[in-house]
View 1 (tube, rainbow, N blue to C red):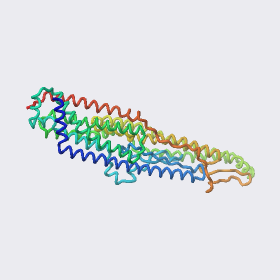
View 2: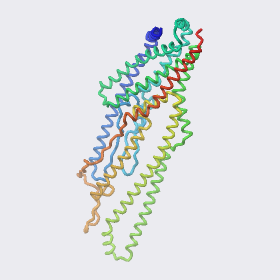
View 3: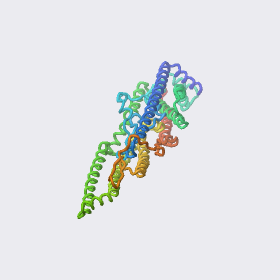
View 4: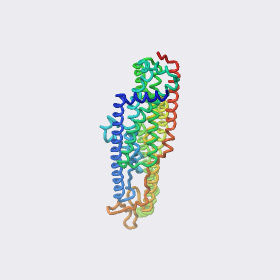
Length: 488
């Protein structure tokens, strides 16, 4: 009897006109989203390589070590083809110098604002929005629809338990929806191979994990549809309730979580942090200017009572020492400014992490938020993307600055120019020659932060488990509700 019910459910779904329509629509959307994602990725790679070449050319054209500037870029991630996440919202490059802190700027949407209006439709969006709606469409009348047609009472004229009947219902709907959807997903993976997208083994495992997460997510909406259908007597009422649940889970609860976390944990805006940084920077340079004035007054005081010849000889003798002292003071000011900027950013990031964690925990009341957060973590396009790159770039900046300062010290350079002292000509300042070539073979090379599979999957394990628990609880609730369901 169980197999007959399973076959009946599969036949009803596959021969249904709405199945043909939904299957074609979903297949078309999935394949189009993968094709667009591949094009976007290839464009991002081309732009990344072009910017890398410009950065190398700028370094090669520098005429002194003090003028060497580097430009770091965020490397495109091939898994963003399926889950764009915050990729289009986060900046792509940052200048590396002693005078500015690391900050990713020029996000794809800031350069192409037109696309920011309609956003990107990727695989995760299709699963989250479209497929969840289709799951509701196929399950809202799973139980009460059978009662309205009179087939529910007829089915239980045979010897079958209500639990087995629900299992057969769920299995038939699950096989009828999930298995056909695997076809366009596999075709999308073949497109990756056909377009020669450079996917590592960890990328493939992330994509497979994403497919598994999507199956869990759709299964949950199938269970929710069966649960509501087992609670209500009217199919029209169950459809209305499911639509309210879908709107609340997709559109309302995640945003309420963000709004509530914003009110509970206050975080300073970027403009406020930058204002504090600029205020400290101005005050520190003002202090440096005042200190430098006092230092030169003390130096002049040391030469009181000397003749003009003695003053000139004393200045020639102390010139190099004074230059080194002034240069060390200037570098200390820059170091203090960088330290303060990083302290303010670290404090803000700690508050922001607390706010984000609270917002995510509240939003996870809706399984939709769990799916979205887990999908972004698996793809490496989660909210931590910006912080990962800026942290790695700051570490590189320390090595880069140390290397430049070492080269300047070896060649007697000070802030982009070379200083030499001659007994006859005095102090000579060389701002660099156009034909000068710098040996940058030992310059530190930036490596993009590595995102290991155990980190991405490990971060998404909670959401996997949460969706699984919701499925079990939802199905258990369906069984309890159907046990008391009036078959008439």
